[in-house]
Image (cartoon, rainbow, N blue to C red; front, side, top):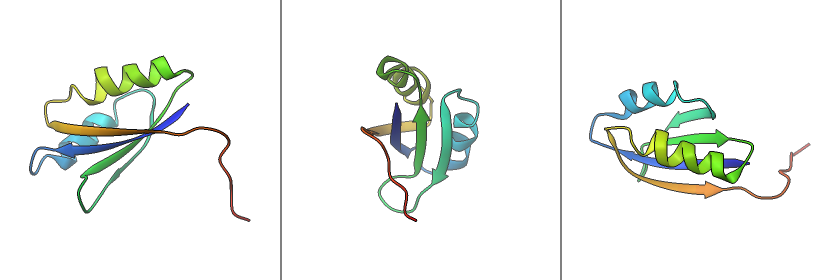
Length: 81
């Protein structure tokens, strides 16, 4: 399972949230964003239950995280060749 989590942080806390996300097992990518959302995290896990655990118990409980939106992928990805 793969999911992308769009994260809004408290003002000026983007770097702190990125630093804390780097310590979370199951997060395989993190990028800071310009625009409505401040950070995007890629989550990979063996099951939907594990994705839910990471999002609810690890990401959303960080002090400087205000809101999240989780985008769950499905099916096989594709590559451009």
